[in-house]
Length: 118
Image 1 (cartoon, one colour):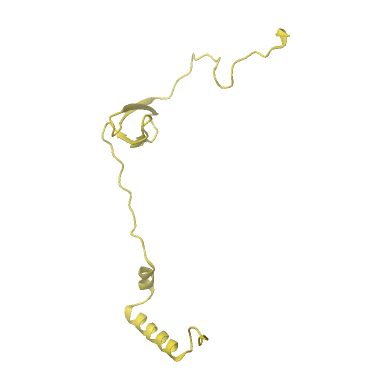
Image 2: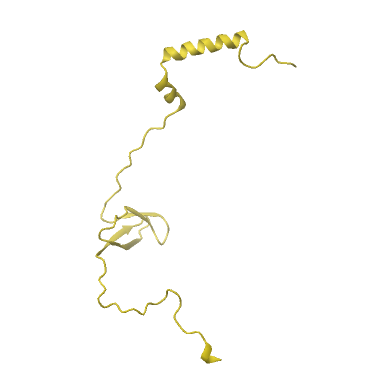
């Protein structure tokens, strides 16, 4: 029974391949400082785009790079309202004319809710 036991390494836990002749990609280490005083280093490939902030592995707060590199502020557009979009299509004079027309139709009973029954 012992002869039929499965033998081997756990999945993904060990590599039996020899590292001779293997050339690793160039790397660099970046330091990060947490607002609570924690410091940690992360390793990145030389050609990798490096982040300016990283979550602290101890407390979870956003940590900034030790070398002082900060992210460039993103360009944001001001939020457009319904009024802004309307003003792109019509002038104030046109809007006043439309309002006058619609109010006249409403007062004459041609548009709007019908007569109310109580």
